[in-house]
Image (cartoon, rainbow, N blue to C red; front, top):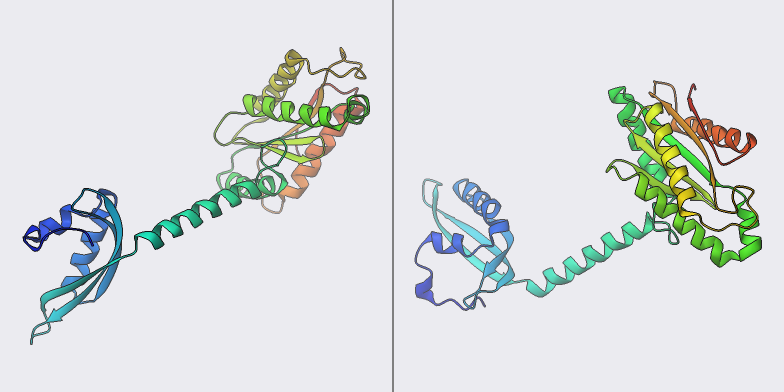
Amino acid sequence: MLGWRTEDWDTVQDWVDRIHPDERDQVVHRCVELSQAGVDHEADYRALTADQRYVWVRETVHVLRNAQGGTEALVGFIFDIHERKQTEQRLLALQRELQALSYQDSLTRVANRRRFDEALEQAWAQAQATQTPLSLLVLDIDFFKQLNDCYGHQTGDQALVQVAQALAQVCDKCNDLVARYGGEEFVVLLPKVCLDIARQVAERFRRLLQEQAIPHARSPFGQQVTVSIGAGSLVPQPGQDCAGFVHAVDQLLYAAKNAGRNRVVAQAVLL
């Protein structure tokens, strides 16, 4: 199966050297430990063939004991599992891809509502445990219905994509999460970020969007797409919940819209 001649297996080191480096230490350590304990065992790993390829094998080892119960010899069998392992790896890759897609908004390619809800719960628990600030932006495209009415839904979709891309550009820290919350509404989760920084992020995004000048003939703000943003921050305390936090920041968004749109309303959240 591996193509080696009998004389190529001279010492245990030959076996060790022909295990793929990624699996070598773990396989050898486990085999030695279980063999010394007198326990039969098996291991899956990539083995080097005589023509210098690696193939997946399953090694099954039977421990022979002497009269005193100690390990006297090992009898091993190697089985070819290469095709099965490759199939398993393809299935795992497909599962990971499907899982990633289940957390992604199909239009904008940012996170979706499901991903945001899970990330918020995790960030909330972490912030509560460490007593560190947690900030949230909730934003809405101004006069989005009029944009769709004027240009059609395809142009409206393009505007959503552009807004999402601009958000991702501004919120580029590894812990930041940009998500489409629904319709023309987006959220940005900012763990370990205080209110002042959250306000700066929101204003930076709002200015970037103005610089991009996405056309909107029915907008009173220079006939271009603008956003209203609510920005809230708190240090979660026992008895508080993240749903209340989202609701409070959503109210700040409505305050921004009621104040004339194309602005940021930022405030510490009290629950």
